[in-house]
Amino acid sequence: MKPIFRLFICLAVCALNATFAAEAPTLTLHHADGQEETLSRIEELPAVLAKRTVAGEWRLVVTGPHKLGVAVHLCLQPDQPLVIEGNGPDAVLDLGDMPPKEAAFCLEGGKFAVGGLTLRNGPAWTVQISQGVGYQLENLRILDARGGGIVVWGPGGVDEPGPAGNRIEHCLIEHFNTLAAQWTSDGMSIRDSQAIIAHNLVRDSATETMGIRVMGAGNRIEGNLVQDVGRGDAGGIYLWAGDAIYTAPGNLVRHNIVVGAPRGIYLDDGICAVRVEQNYLIDCSTAAIFIGGGRDHVVRENIALRCPILAHLDNRRTGWRDLPQKADVFSAARARLQKALRDETLSARIVAGGLDVKAFETLPETDFNQPVGNRVGGNVLMPVAMEFRWQNYARPNEALVGSAADPALPNRLLPVATTNWKRLSAKDLGVAGMPDVAELLKACAEP
Image (tube, rainbow, N blue to C red; front, side):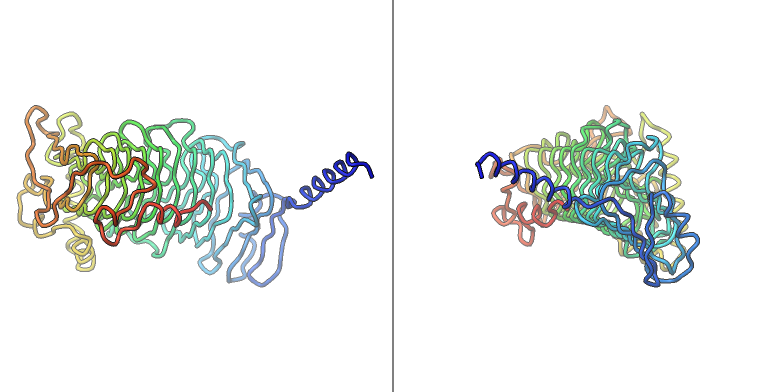
């Protein structure tokens, strides 16, 4: 046989094998009683589940590529948890035909585990989760979303009930908010309590939005990489609570990497009692840590590279000349805290979360609203730059003098150890117990 014919046959066989290797699109619903059912479109799922009454776990297996043209609203019975899982790398859902102002997958009641899927071209939100829903999202790939990636509308403080054990892990959200909305289309926007947001990659959105926004109490934001997200008034990892600034304490932001955001970790509009520990903050153009008026934060052993300011602090809770309406939010927050402290259980959770309740009960309002009780110590800033910047929101023409340094654990301003942030080593910089960047990148490898 001539070589050219051998080559032709080889190419034909390879093409045929590739055709058979690509899975045909299927949607298989595994019933709780062991039966199986094939759906023709994902839009059928809510109606099909509504007719089934068997208790136990249900499972939808998605194989191959599919399109979704309308929102899917899922409300399950408490005894019928649903697993939605992709079967292989070709399990792709294209959401580009959906209206831009809708959410695609709306989990509105019950308990869900969703993973192993690629979701492209999402509308306002790709996944939207209502309050009271139990969820575990893992190994999702949300790409080219016109709006935000994942939004959770759960409890906003210790005084609002919600399920425990919610998790978002090992998800990739890449190139989102392509319509460039301001402050509304984050990579993740999580209002919940005691949730875990860990080992996710959120990147590539040069818009005025947040990488990971968290609202609520006692959440753990750990081991995430947020890269090249945000412009203007935005942050890589952003915590905010509205009128729950005192009733949403105890959030932990640890072992994350933020690269190329205006503010690395942004504690906005008076949120209080957040622990920010052992994060890498790189090329943050405004500040590594931005404390917007809050109190009782612990900021320790973070490593900042090429950031002009280690920590910004201001006094916006004492009065905001340019935005006087903010005073109504802070007043409502004070009333909300006062009510919560009448409940012994809630009071204990607030104290355990780190808020100085005694100061609230004994100090005049003006004194309590000062940005005090913040402990910023043991951090490393390279190269040498500004350690603290204080800003007076109430009287912009007057300097604000405050204290946030921890005398027992001074910050260190050092020359640059390496220009390659991927080679940063906490051990080399004298921070014990903190993983090197390489370890963290390996732990949040792409799904």
